[in-house]
Length: 411
Image (cartoon, rainbow, N blue to C red):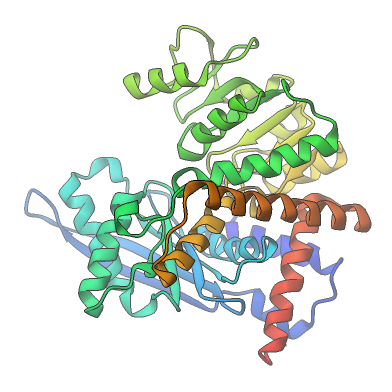
């Protein structure tokens, strides 16, 4: 599998062809500003001590504090975390919120840990990086296999270390600890606003067919949201398998089955297929909502669709992206499509700073305004430059990051 940070550097190099960035800035953006590698000793329930490796990548903070999630996954790597921190900086820039890019991760399969072990690991990770985070330095958030409960433990540990309340140091918290309404489904909701805007531009009507790769938080939520808006979800998948019903799936029923059985396979009102078979079915909109590099060159050659919407981070390989561009398949890039999560995290920071909290309706109105306007800007640049939506999004983001760096005298 290609190094994820190399994938980012490839895109950065491509973007230079459309935007004249100085060599000084290019060199700075070709590496992360700070990278932490930590070892976290945790006493397990059986009395043994296991040492877990963790990372925190702080890519660029010219536009504001570093910002980015923490993932717990056995395949976390240095290259992945660095790439995700860079993508986060560009993501914040493309939707024009005043934050930089960071990311963290711990190499662990959390399903193998007890609740007590998971809490000790969460607190241990924060102890290891506490000197390098803060509400005006670096603000972590949930990511793969982490959630509001884990963020609560991390917040409590950090505040214990610094000796004061600082609720804005971490976002994605429960409402009882200063979380924002709409945060739990904001990635999918923001993605919907972008997908729906693109569908209108491409002449894709309501009732259009949709396939979703991945049925975790983002995949499940986008399925509910798209279905409610009148789109027809015909196939969904998880890590174990996929199901398809060309007449359309009842997402509430599918979600209930998944919660009861733990898998999608065997769902009685659909046909079981291999996850790879999702690419063989002609569909109007294909939404990858799983992990990186989940759409390969061969998948792109097979897939017959009008629109690919990257709700996951980096789901399309460089080779697959080239195939989509050649076949004139519109690809909504991850740095735009899944930015809803960090936008509402930004809202959470603002609310924490003021000690004043918005109703859900207000948060959603602000989110919709940012996401639809950001899509309109990306579409406009793509049309003017006669290039892909991915290149257009990176042009906008690179110009904003460059402008901030120049203003700071770092150009």
